[in-house]
Every structure is written in C-alpha cells, then in structure tokens.
Length: 255
Image (cartoon, rainbow, N blue to C red; front, side, top):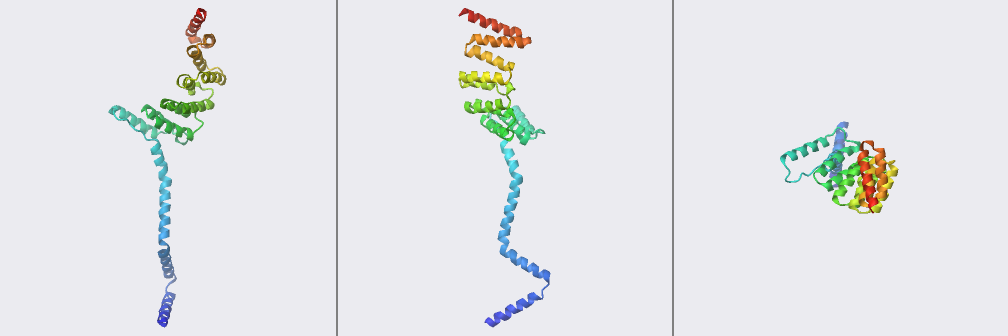
C-alpha cells in the first residue's frame, strides 16, 4: 500500500514537473486562494464598508442636522414656503466656515417653527464649528431663553459678550434676562456697568441702563444723569430725552 502511494505521488510530482511555469503559478495561486479565500473576502468586505462610510457618513450627518419637522395644521402655503426656504439654506452658496452658516440658518428656521430644542441643537453645532462668530451664541441664548433654560441662556449670551464687547446688539438680551427672567437686579446692574465700560458708553447700552434705573430700581436721580447723557449725545432725539429728564426731576421734586 505504501509502495502504491509512493508511485502515485511520484507520478504526480513528475506530471507537475513537466507543466509550464505559468500553469504552475496559477495552480499555486488557486490553492492559496482556496485556503485564504474567506479571509480575503472578509477583508475586501470590510474595506468596501469603510469606503462607503467614508463617503456616506458626511451626507447622513448633514441630512440629519439640517432636517426640519413641519408641525401639523399649518397651511399649504406656509408649508411650501418653509420647504422652499429649507432647500435654499441646504443649497446655500455661502455655507460659512465648516457649514456653520447653514446650521445657524437651520436653527433660525426651526425657531420660526417653534422647534426650540432643534434650534438649540443647530446653534450649538454652528458655534462648535465656528466658535469665533458671536451671532451663533446670541441665537443660542435666545433659543434657550424660549425654553426657559435661563442658566444656559446666560452662558451663551456671556460668550457673545466676550467675543463682541463693542456690539451691544449681540448681547443686550443679557440685561433683559437678568432683569425680567432671572429677576436678579444686582447681576443686571453689574452687567450694565461692565457693558458701559467695555462698549465705551454705547448709546444703546446707555438707553437700556437709563430705563433699568428708572423702571426697575426707581433710582430717579441716577436715571436723570443717563437720560441727560443721551440728550447731549443724540441730537435728533434730544427733545424726547429732555422730556424724560424733566419728568423724572418732577418726580424727585414731588417726594
């Protein structure tokens, strides 16, 4: 039996010896592939999946973060307008740094739909992608304000204040937040004084602080001083401001 196997193997070796070199290589490759085929196929499938994820994930991520939920009960006309605006935003030719403007505009659109949790998510994403743009933090603060999350709103407004200390239109909501939502007069006063200093006496801040002194703190003497500053600096509206000054002087004199 062993002798038969020996002669059989010898015949096989002899037959392989006379095969052309290309055929030998092919037979060896086929044998290797038969042994390693499962592993190679598995690696190929993993590589294909990685390629699909590499090219597909950004689109999935973008679609998820720019989606909107239209509420039931809106008119067909409003629905069409929202959808058209949504498409315009997604196809914007000015997406901003890392698409941050697109996500900011999506947040504004969601705010218009009263989807404030969705708006917060969009504004946070915009701010993370471009943390130097104060608008994103201001919008984030407004969205938090609507949600009643005043602590988070304060943090967002303070960040806008830090980035743009000379642009009151970006952070004046902070004074209103302290005054009317958080009802913390001390914080409000400290904020206005700091805002006056950092904005070099911006007239919008002066006006807001004068109103705060008059209506909230009832500090009429101090309010008179700031209304007078406005009257001296804002000539077109001087008559209105002087009217405030005279009104408050009459109140002080009546005490």
